[in-house]
Image 1 (cartoon, rainbow, N blue to C red):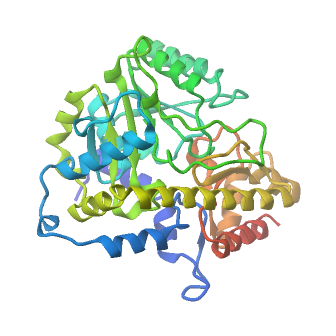
Image 2 (image 1 turned 90 degrees about the vertical axis):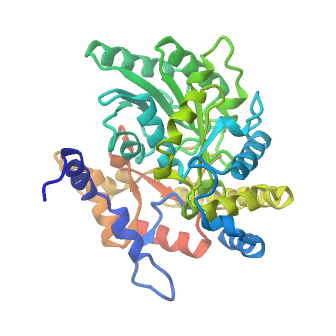
Image 3 (image 1 turned 120 degrees about the horizontal axis):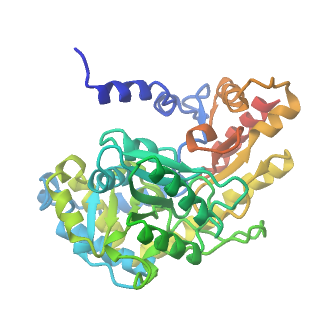
Length: 426
């Protein structure tokens, strides 16, 4: 049976999605010693035992957990829990109220809702390079929006000079008749692991106001920040949510939207809980109610999330320990990089990754013809040694040979993966 043109395009795109071939074959030193070590998926397994223990000790499901709940965009209970939790931890200039949020089954669904709500088919979202690779399917696959990558060349992607680069792309696109819908940042940044300075966020908001587009800050790593005593250049920037900025005189508040979820800060990708925070756009929240059934949070995940977020004492200890462990693993992977003369992007103080130039090392050890793509060569070598990293090609890297290493794994798993990377480059 013939598929629609959009389904055919999605089928074609799925052929390059290695991740879903890798995950069923993951390495385990006892149960699957011949498996693939994945340092390519943004999952934090450092605190899984702690998280699991809390769930099992506090589950206490009541019968409503087996129903649809009381709303397609989140139950009353979860909206109260999440709004209180985020007000405490994101420190917004205006408290987050339950009516300011829409719950979704993960932040991919949240992004897709924003694409559907803000962009007509063919309209564009701006993302700076390198960008989170899954922004592409989240924003474009099902509703026909387009993604416009913004190259920065030698400018800092998170610096003041980057703002003009965004405007250059806007102006060039408008000259071709393309219409802008929004600008999206990953804050803290994926894959660079850094936070945007407050001054840069303000300037990006001003740019969005000037061109009458939406400003979207994906803050799914907001609490996965840690001290960095290794790198001084660029100096690590503390995390400040976009919601800490008073939009008065900067941007129409109805154009400001923030995303957060349980996946990263609580190492819980699998429970599928995401949040759209939009404090001054009730029409956005109302519009999603009618289509919210397609992205509603499981009632059991809803219940688990409330149990977690309402336990202030446990959450405080969890966040502190998680940040400590992330800091330790960051040092571990930086020490590995330095030992093997691998260039990496410094200044990391958030999230789970190190952005590394493996192409440079590969070129130093192998002949690479002028017409060959070193990214493809390195990726082939990595997979032949049964280690998977996210390729810079999928993240809009401006230069070839860059990869993202996820370090939020226990020592044995991380070390096994790093050893295989070195073997692949030999």
